[in-house]
Length: 291
Length: 160
Image 1 (cartoon, one colour):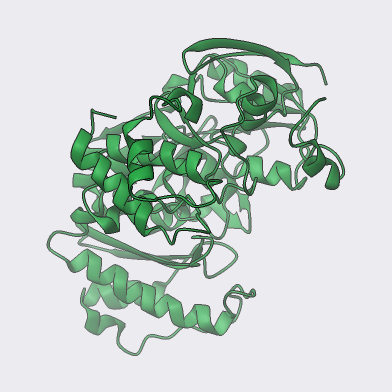
Image 2: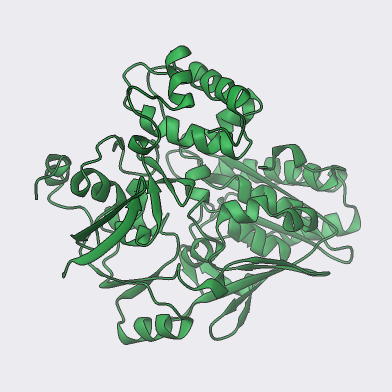
């Protein structure tokens, strides 16, 4: 092939992505049948993580089943007690939806800070949570708000959905349909991002439901986790005083060239304080929401 | 693997090519359509040189398969202005010296138009936040921010 980029690809040993077949089903039934028929088929949502993964040859699917044609997986519904977000809803839509921003400002704020604008136009909530990258934002919101994930087979509480590093409770061929978020009295999110990549080094989501408080930490460990000790302290006293003296053991936390486990443990306390400050602010972060 | 036929509207012109499913949108544009204004800087979703508009929104064409864009509308830098009739933002880039080597410029202009259309060009901090997905190694960004804000002031969100 005559190609301006051929020398670049050739230098890496040929075209970087393994070959695959592509399908764009028009119905959920058709998508499930395609995934069922081929154990090495993979669903393709926005592809903003999957395509870089394929370029690195870390995955070798035989067939990509593009879900963009499934309208029923798109859209946001805001009810009295819950906000429901379809799996194929793009981050930019979640970030700019006025009803969602009014109901759960911290969730809109979180979505507005995922990656950068071009990725937010394509990346989806369902794709992000199904991948469960430890450096992703949405797992913090799902666990922090006690969301429920509706799939093609069942409903899974967020606490049971995220099972480990890049692992979820999803079975082969099972697809996320939508996520249902309970609306809290108030909530806040803070991520401390790597300044170069923008990925989450440590994040914390805090939600106050009146009778209970939830605190989720993403980015710091291999998988999102809760902090029961802080939840109890904040349930007694939802103020910065409840965080005084809090410290987390670095044991089991992620360590890489950007941040040691000890540093991440320290950042958890910082992120928790900032998330709480957002939850307590009278008009949280409205100025930073996209138009 | 068998090639598939991918049809999309590029700058208003219907384009159909038989490509491998793994063909990236940027490869479709550069190698099959011959539109080399869309650049590949990093190929890892970081630099933004490959930014194009898909159904009117700025996306990275190195991180989309051409097949994903089938049946949809793509606008590249070739579709926004010509050397004799520059787009107002291209004109602003020239006036403000918002480029030096020019490699990132097509992506900067495509992202800049998207920023102005979404009404996000009101202050420096917001424009810089919106440019997080675009890297420039020459200018230090200040003149790019100036050009985008100036164009937004002159043309308005609907004038670009």
